[in-house]
Length: 126
Image 1 (cartoon, rainbow, N blue to C red):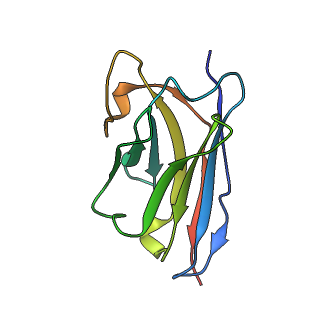
Image 2 (tube, rainbow, N blue to C red; image 1 turned 30 degrees about the vertical axis):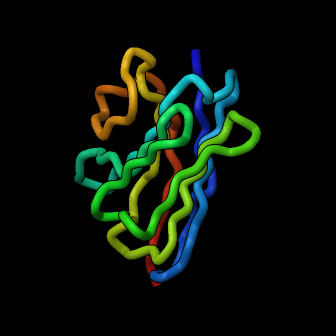
């Protein structure tokens, strides 16, 4: 059973930056594509970024393109989401998830992911 833990969420002012980490506590992440999702109050969970198993392919939602980057750590059990120029509408609980091994590439769909972390809160406000 793969266990994922997110960290790095905080309260930040508009225009600020945060780096979120997704760490696997029971395995490496080499075998999984990893997605980042977020869920704001009263809204559905949305996919915002994904990195392939090899790290050679990344996807971003239009709402974060050009501001967020995703990368795999050298330790092979961490995937990071660098968030720059944060806006109030980025406020949400952020989750990382591991894509089902039966699928290749990346996916923006919640149902394609088998393992989820507990989430970390990001609040962008003055």
